[in-house]
Length: 181
Length: 418
Image 1 (cartoon, chains in turn yellow, orange):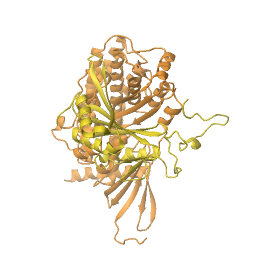
Image 2 (cartoon, chains in turn yellow, green):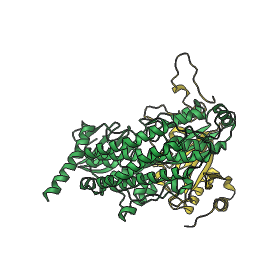
Image 3 (cartoon, rainbow over the protein chains, first blue to last red):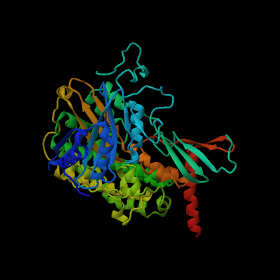
Image 4 (cartoon, rainbow over the protein chains, first blue to last red):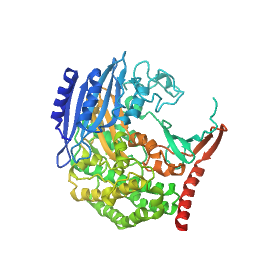
């Protein structure tokens, strides 16, 4: 396996995805006394090219490590970030690679990647129940953390009307603290 | 539904409360006689919605103390990853001395956590004398942590842009004294855990996780390293003071020459990591740079800067159980975090549990499950469902523990009769 520099990785994404690559950014910071670099690559892709992007990460590293999917409700859109790490097992060589996908609120669907990375199952189940993003083709559709009696159509991580406002326990005489502030 | 008369498979739910484990989780075991054929993991019993609090109630500084309470044992790793993510998002650089102090307390936590685990593991197989021995030995590091941070458990050492307490030259001799104590008893611990035939019998070839499975199921920490994956954030993408130290991921073949990926290998990895941690602390003490410990000492000023900051960051830290990762996004003008996602190591390690338990025996469940050092609460009772008679019987935690102890005794008896 050849180890590419962060810039070469970004270029390889450009070649593989073409116009579907929305944005890319390389973050570097020097740490401690020896000033070694801590590096993170941020890649933003269209949903149509998402599967292809994950497959492309698979060509950079056999068994890419998916740490977690983080998701954010941005009003009209929901943003998913797949936090990958590649080139692990080598001193100072590992890179964090964050793959960002933006989904429109009226079409919250994303294909599963459990066929490429079987261990992605838990975090896909969590994203599905917490953010209300439908994962197409997920082998296990059950909830992960939420109890079975949790109401349908309420998604704890949303900030819109499908959020958990009605489920908050508020002390008598107090306003619920919710949203910004 | 008509029951098959010859059905020999039963489902045993273990948990959500069990003394073998420290926090609640449910394992649904499908068994054929004594053999486990399938396992389902059911989590969520202690979901507290902490990320939600961080996004709706707390400001970024209050979140440090909240992240400390994600886990009682990993109360260094979570704030560690969290502050690194915030520092990245807000563009704050901590002073060099603070980076070294962070490493020292993180390594102290690793020593105490691994020793705690070793005691629990001994208890799981009914070897309680070792459990008492290890936990007595663990007191030394607890005292040292109290000496350095002022607290045995929740240490509150971290601040965005540095640490809250300095480690001064006058404290070095006391720290060295504790490290010397561990060095002096290390060989004894090694003999107790690696040469004892009772432990070897109960842990060799139990709960095997192959290298390929470990990679596919995204396993992290000692569980992955015991399966021969040399993955360690301190080595791969060194953060904080680790970037100056040449940490090497420990795999069992360093000691035995082979990788089996069983419980015994996980003991080897954790034991050698205790030694590694001692060496790291010593190196940090020797090379600690002078200077301030905080980038910004005034909390109000720091909070103001964080409210104005805009950006996102990923913090990764190697906890005793594996990689902890925090993702933080700050929005200008917002007092709370705009987004916060925490991933604890057990989250991914749990996915490897079914693979580990399949083909094993019920009596091996406590030790095999405990071998990933799960940070979820544990099974206090199990309901045995007899499908044929449609009868439910309750297996309490004590009974399951007894089964495990009984197995050790039986194996010992068979061995001595030979």
